Image 1: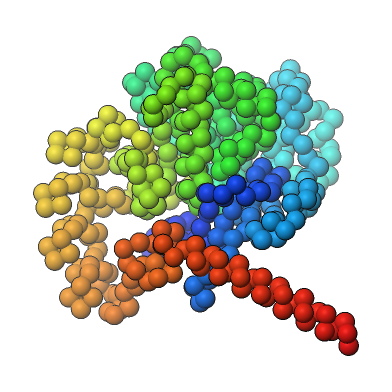
Image 2: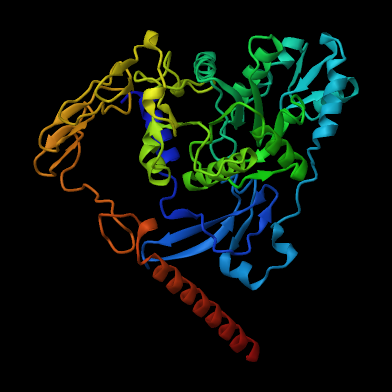
Length: 483
């Protein structure tokens, strides 16, 4: 098997599979929600397939890596003790990212000549002349001769945080950026809310300075390094999974003021591919409601949303966001060889655009082979051929699907129908080992665990078991003391 193909499949598995026994709980039923340094935590449920019960806990919304944020509390422990100490497991880090102070530092750096400017690559910090030696002593990598043009493109200066358990920063290619900006201009969009898309925000700001158009943008991003480069009216440090503004009321007011501007506002978001979809969709709904309130809109009108996400997460997105559709456009990234079409995957990037707009309203570039399907009333990729039996253009992954008359649906070209398993599968599959993915709680195939009507019962029994276990532990400790 090709090594790059194998590594790509492993990557998809790590992103999409994760721990299927853990779900995010959106409706916390007015529970007290503790906070970590990244804002309000999220409630999760961990399902035990052996006992068919679940137990709920609070953990950091932003990071899955315990080395970055170790916050963890069982829900029953939080209920029993709502003291202030539950705000975090450990004290918050000493580094406080003050936007005003970082901008003042950056102003001093800009006043320096090109050969006096330097950047600590490890810290992501622009240095003043007397600070370089300290970073050298710590064996940090320094970059010198920072030009004005380089300062205007910080996404090319800062090293991306591409750890999938933390920031998972992958940056769009110029081709992707140009496609999106041209699309927004054609839709008469005048303001863009960038939730985690620094390269889009950067491109808009630079085009404004060049006088190419008057589009405005506001970046909401978790990465503190951008606080140096962009002023408060252009950037708020933000956690997209809990709608938390690190700058408090000042940043919230900046955000509300931006939504109140005249003209058409659109949202672009590029979350980590391992993100909890339910949590992000809740945030998007909150942002939409804030926009409606700011504009005095009383109906359910929404801002256009362009959500960059892998095609293999389509089912998950549709479960939480049924009004969203996936476009065929393949999104390329600079710093990931498997997420671009000119090298890496033969089928092109697996990342697509999900949107709450009708696909027929979004033209895709015909120079790249995209074509308009009159029957589907939308643009399809070159390899995505219309199937008259399925009555749609079925391809998802960049190959040309073929129709199976037995399964009565289109399948990937490397699948063949197995009469013993009664499904289309890989030729080398082992018969009889097909897994029916139904509900973990009751075993039904028509729904998943999260929609099971018996879910509350499993939670209640889990709490009872936990209380009994604690009671036994207390009784056991008393007996030991008597001895």
